[in-house]
Amino acid sequence: MMVTLPPDYRPYDHEEFMNPLQVEYFRQKLIRWRADLLKEADGTLASLSEGGIHEADITDRASVETDRALELRTRDRARKLINKIDQALVRIENGSYGFCEESGEPIGLRRLEARPIATLSIEAQERHERMERVHRDD
Image 1: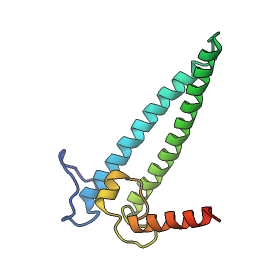
Image 2 (image 1 turned 90 degrees about the vertical axis):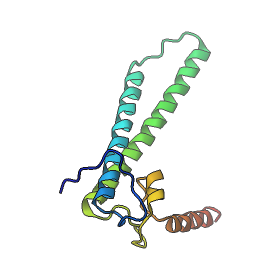
Image 3 (image 1 turned 120 degrees about the vertical axis):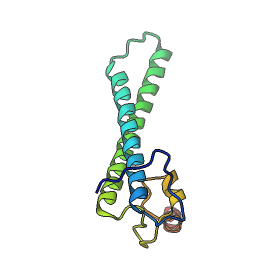
Image 4 (image 1 turned 180 degrees about the vertical axis):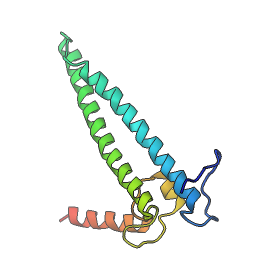
């Protein structure tokens, strides 16, 4: 079913949670974010493939190496994000998007607006973080 989103549409709490308009809104938001990440990654790839380090000066060379390491980390982060976006798009397809993986409760619009790839409600996320802290201190 195709849903046409009004250009000025914003999800509101008084609407039914994850109604077809909200689902389409987040689908488009995820697709735009994914496209931006891919565009950035292409730019990074282009500057990385400009390749060999020609700087004769040792400080320039070190600076180029640092930039390259940062670009590789950025690419890795983008790749992981794209993966999470793809997973969110699958959840949109199967109707589970926007609901907490643990409790099945709505994640909430404000949280999804800020982090459209969220899979846990704030409460479940905080529980996870507390558990991680406890186990990290062991």
